[in-house]
Image (cartoon, rainbow, N blue to C red; front, top):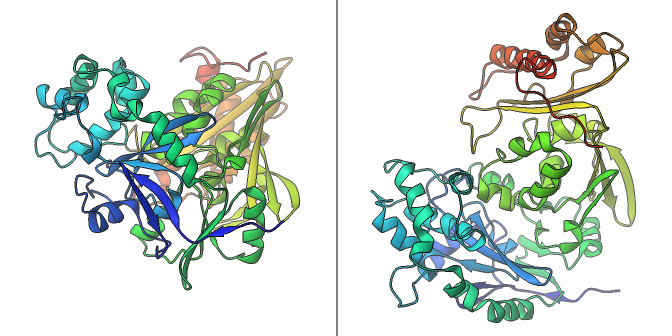
Length: 488
């Protein structure tokens, strides 16, 4: 059945309907706001989704509700906003038309000095306040992981976050008071059509649904697939890469399915880190802390699990733990689907087992077997909002005193996320003791010859990986914090 086509991207910006037909595929939201709309409250600091000065809120229909999330406008493309509501700092106001409660709290608690980063902090706190009007310090710090301040220091900002509700209530806020009206306007904008916009040599396409996506990629097998744009955004802002034709899939509800059961989880490729967080923590509690260190809140709101897998980065955060758990992915091309074990998907640097026109449709993660030891680790220069120097995931089963099954998967140690087969062999069928753990640690030198770069030297990476194996043993022996075991 033929899909109807619309030739404009339509969204709501504050209280204005925007319709764009002559839209470059690589047009960022930040440039559109500042250069086209002269909304200069949104700042450019890093142009790579790292500092948070460009933070805005994006509202999207989800089921019967409307969800607002903080995002980085510097790496968010305008083409991804069809049917959404973009809220900038200029839209904020109090009931009397004066300062918004978030702004008032920042003023009274001296949360700003030079002011450059302040609008981003305000918008991140605004998003948190609407979801949780009485947050604790941990919730505030997690919401601000993606916002960097050069001069104020974070203590006044955290105090401001804790004081917002003393200046007003979320129920009185404009985004709550007008929610029904905004939802109706967004439903009118979402007409179920495919969007094709831009010049002939600079096209963007927004498929109508996942079946239409399959058709689009068959017709344009060399297209750039854009989900959360946390990587593709940098291709444009830092490397000036041409991404046309760009196929935007972030709004496809067909790719956001989540199924949870005793056998594990099925996550659609378009599920964001934020959307998966609660279930990941419930089914694999060892991953909860690790998951909260993937980027900052803005990156977790934008980035998708399928995108993190599909791009094949050797330092992607999700592949090592998913490989250790035995995850598989469903790849689709046209109407044909095939299942690939995740560890087999990564072939070489920049090369994955995915043909032109094929896309990742879903990820299947088996349940952690009862009694298995499992741990995940991330090493980075900063604890929060930083790319891994290396990451590791280890799953081990002990039966009758010997290791009957073991998987060790590492990121940042090779050209792809990779299992440590020599280290696994040193443990399989052997007693689980300190001496054998040491042999496995040393065997990593046979598995990996890591490179040195700006994040870590080769020597550091190898030693850190070996120390993680030693740590895993100490945790399992109770000499450090006891490892969590698989749920029943």
